[in-house]
Length: 299
Ligand SMILES: C[S@@+](CC[C@H](N)C(=O)[O-])C[C@H]1O[C@@H](n2cnc3c(N)ncnc32)[C@H](O)[C@@H]1O
Image (spheres, rainbow, N blue to C red):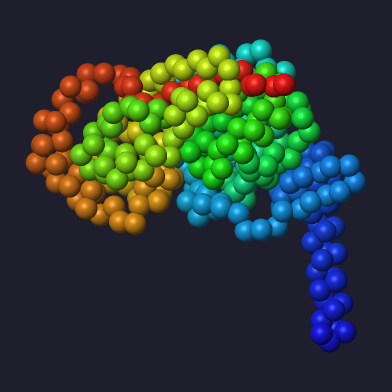
């Protein structure tokens, strides 16, 4: 190795170490935007620089255009958090559903999502559920909204939640034992099949949490937050690229043209209306979403 190469490498290493360390120090004061500092034990600092799965850096562009907190969903989440002293919001995204008036720290891996958080939002640390950069019992409660199905290693993430949280875990998720609704039944069955495998079942959660309470999350006909089933009464919305772009289930499909053509033609010829008359009088629909709240198994 030439001496110049040696100094270049040494300089790069020093640069990486110092930028990460200062990111961490800054993060302790406010928020961390930058490489993730994942583990601190005594004086040893392990910086995780390996490329991480941040699919939302691609699909999260303009997320806040179609994905905002729906007040009726917020109310159901807040009712489970009212006794919280300090909350960690995992997979926090752009900050939807974070109660303004509570002590909260957000954790989010995607820079794109972090960049869309308001300047008044709670502090955010760039990180993953699987490696939460906090000491044991740093929070009373953890919350997570429509993020758990993205976690690469859920067991590890649940262990981490048990480590950093002293009381309760509150999650908005989808029940993989639920029936498909018209979109995933008639047009995109592959989404339903994939989701059934990806979303956590009750027994997986029972392994890591006690006193699991599950309540149905009824989705309003005019839901403000454009997730997969939010447009159950507004079928034309699914034909809009912008709407689909912020829904990960669509972003992960290789090709959605067949389903979209079928939907378009069923809307044009009245077949959609004939098949779905039974839901059109409802103002809220059960499409399998749930709010789970449970106690951590904290030794
Ligand atoms: C559908 S978005 C939900 C964002 C926000 N909770 C909301 O309700 O708008 C899913 C979020 O989970 C994040 N995510 C993906 N993998 C993650 C992981 N391993 N740990 C923590 N968050 C993750 C994504 O970057 C994304 O911001």
